[in-house]
Amino acid sequence: MTDSVVVDASVAVKSVVNESFTLQAQQLLKDVSLAHQLIYAPPHFLGESLNAIFQKFRSTDPLKHISEEELLEAVTKLLAFPFRVITPPNLYLEALQFVKAHQQVTLYDAMYVVLAQSLNLELWTADENLVSLVGSVAPWVRLISDYPLPEAVSASDQPEETTSEEESAQ
Image (tube, rainbow, N blue to C red):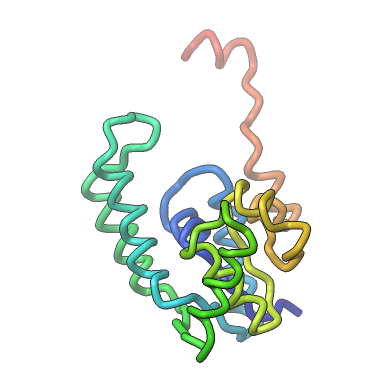
């Protein structure tokens, strides 16, 4: 059975914008929902997530840019996201203490880490830098790339092989 989780903005964005590890982010959220568990986030989650999506729309990099239609679709999906924003009484003070002890971690990221710790839940993130900075002291912080996909999804996600006739027709 899947437990409730904390997710950060990077996982939320991956769940609504097609990019690397989108399938893992979508599978995590699906599994949590099917298990009738909750998805928690700190107060800045929605603003941070919306900003990240908007930055993809604003980007001039063709590998990152999303169209206005994709922007509106992603924002609509995100706003329907079944997350529960909570602010435990000592969240800000504990996040400040965490940042003081781990000076390369941002306060925003520390709020996710501390929230997950206070709820005794895993924090799922796509932020490899965060995991490398805190993984040894915060083993509840997990990379979304490590989230398991069902074998049927994993196999169907593989690019199809093309025959030489198909390749020459392309």
